[in-house]
Image (cartoon, rainbow over all chains, first blue to last red; front, side):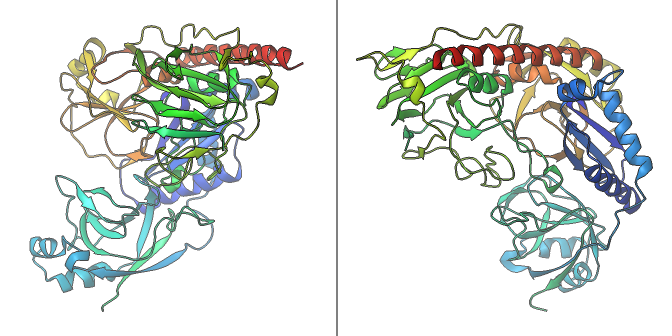
Length: 218
Length: 331
């Protein structure tokens, strides 16, 4: 990924086991960082290390390119880490105001999927979702897998979306941490903040966490 | 208070070399667009190269120094001018007397310039960095661009340097400047290494990438440069799940156009990664503007790294020279 980052791609797919492995590698690299390691991005089924090539060159004096040296470190992380992160996942219960002005796309999604809005809500709240990754915005969660009865592709064109909006895009569900343009189908809104700059822990949801939604009016 | 904004510019923000360690929370590193200019600005005034600087776009702010300061301006040339009509050089340290106004009346070249003050600007650190995250509204100066009336304290006094001001003169340039050498030469030729999805391009699109010119579209900013050129095609249009991206990543959009991710890029993206601009080219890239054209040339990883190491080595020499000059003055 250019001369300042390396990506290991475990496969272009949404898979709990691949994601588990990515997070296990992330955990391992955080516990065994190398000097010159700047940051790590975890995604669905890939992990990217951002590094300082000049520092690594001076400090570690690799035999070949720094890129190859970092690739070796990723390979080590792959082999030394287990299949998933150790410890029990953090569980969150997120209260949602579904429909009305809080969920502008709920009615359309229901109609498209030949369900009532109440059935959509029931299906959305009836499952425990895994947070696969945080990306796109600080604290924006990508959770899966949404029941296929309510899975709907994202909209063609993004529209303004308010902070706290809960959306569906394909088999993913997520929560917008800020007002932002968005293409996900918005079915509700939560008052729980996803991001707080002042907090010790500014981002509420992390990759590997589990989330259950519940209907505030239910 | 040390520096106040008399009139705000288009986009002036406090930045440093970026906020690293939080990408997996979606908190993008951000930081300066032109890391070479920003670090040299700091070196010229005796700061740590990673100290907070003001990144200024054109039209730039009107700034009032409320105390004496040792400053430098690097990067783009917006004709930095003190008081009514006294232009000063870029890439050179300057001692400025209190109650002096700095403004930028005329664009000459480049896209963003950097103002460093001795000691650095006093803004709180957020997650280990002074950079402004505009999306999150955090970091830098209250998480936003600088507005009229904003006041920025300095962390230190430039008392030693004030002694260099001659009587009745508002400023004194010091007698050395930095020659930027190769860094900004051949501004329209941008070197890249191939990305994960390069091989998914048709052969004729790969040729087009290397032979055609791409124009930077007006809707280009700190997040990314939208490029316009002959559309490129993949052999198969499989959807990709989101993966990590970085500053310099070249993505292929569904309409066949390219987008070049810059300093404020998001941490992840789902578009094919065709290539990555190499690190040593990023300062030059950061100084291009809408309607500038780009010609991409491919290099391999050993070449990319060698070019970066040369540039870093050069920066080390510049740093030592600047510190030596300043130490001689102070002693």
